[in-house]
Image (tube, rainbow, N blue to C red):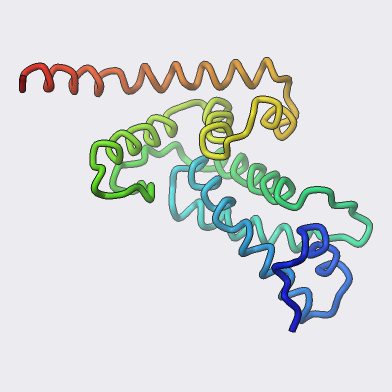
Length: 193
């Protein structure tokens, strides 16, 4: 049996396009293992809802398989998957009723011993959910995917100035949303001294 982990993304894509059923399945499984976590994380951060993120995550990989065509010239599998996820998330956001996410629904994967950091992280994620979709998406790509303004600009097909504006306004809005929490914490610390 071949070791598919040694193949590049583009080689795996070609195997899926041109090979027998078993090879296709193994090549797809390798791509899935490489990108599943990141794609799910993106969906969750954009949608703020675990069940909806899971649905969109699964639909992303199904759409990827359905979109494989013999004449497509694939240059970046990860970006292609992220583009599919983005489009599906945008559609889901257009279709869903606006819902507030409670702190109990959020899963962050942060060390439980660091309660304060975990609490702040949960507040930031909740604040992200309150942002306009344009600001939220730009911030998620920058903060959680460590993408530069240029990379976000290329990905969203928007000018860099627009991306900078969205990131800056998004951060300002998060600061505004979280200001009461930090003010309360400051007062409590001063009272305990």
